[in-house]
Amino acid sequence: MVWRRESRVEGPGPTSVGRGLPLAFRRAVRSRVPSGPIWCACGKRDAQCDEMRSRSLHGSTVQRGQTFHREIGLTETQLRSAIAHHTVRRVFHGVYVDSEVADTRDFRILGLQLVVPRHAVLCGNSASWIYEVDTFPPGRQFDFKPECVVPCDAGRSRSPHISCRQALIAPEEIAETGEVRHTVPVRTVSDLLRTLRRPYALSAADSMAHVGLVSKEEVRAHVAALKGYRGIVQARELAELIEPKSESPGEGWQRLRLADAGLPRPESQLIVADRFGREVARLDNAYVEAKVGMEYDGKEFHSLDEDRQNNADRRTVLTDILGWRMINSGKADILGRDPAFELQVGEWLGIVPSLPRNW
Image (tube, rainbow, N blue to C red; front, side, top):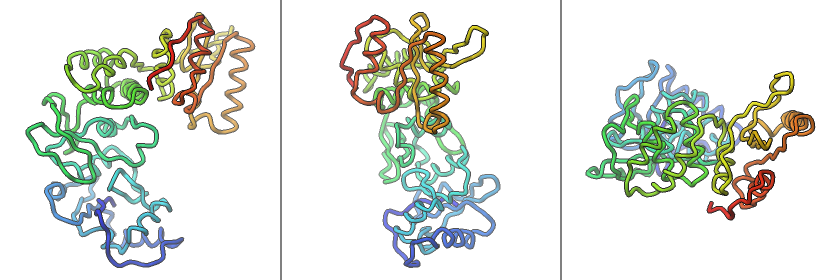
């Protein structure tokens, strides 16, 4: 079940929002849709919702209905409680779904059809979301408004559920998936490089290149042809730093700090082997000749005690046996203002870094 939220919710409903809500919510959902269809429940009839009628996804008819809260008797407070109990999850701003529904590309398209006008084109982070690539700045992926552009001669949507602007966009820069229009990968990356904050822009481009949607040469040629666009100078600079080998945003942030400090470009994802040819480590960024290695410790793979112990053992081999000098950093180290990262690497390379940086 998927539905779009009204700006104001009214209607009857039980007063309790405690422990019994998730079960009550699921019973209400399943009693309303016993055959398992995905519902579009909107409060008013408009052009966007008219587009949704008579479509199907995996055999489940998307139907139009009354405001979902009124249908099952939930207030705004009870909806928030259902989210807190993980009975409901937020897809993006204004759109929610039963938490048991799988997050697939087809489902994302279905959700976007609820709020994006037919003539609009998804762009930026929303377009990369369609490609199943996470280019969002930290925390933004959990509550975002779909971004879209419309031609300069078309009216902008005033829906509170989307962010819509007018822009120049050529027909060859538009692709269509299902019935949702979005920018092609190279235009998507170009927009991200121009509009996002510097570190997030580079990590977004790295992510798109890593899955093979764009190449560095393709992006570089595209942004070189743009004249007078906001943020184009940043886009051209960052296009030179795109690294398809990069496997996490933090690796790109490290590389950007080195570049902005005037230090040489490191090698990404360098495999280090012992004297028997066995792989000891794969370094996020490294200077081979100087034997200087850098690793970014993100929460996903470096937060458990076992992970930290494995990291410590591996780095002991690198430093004590193989002679590498290692610097390890986390999100606070790289996105913060402390210049210790550049200073340490510069000292090991014998180069004075250019400081301070401008982000």
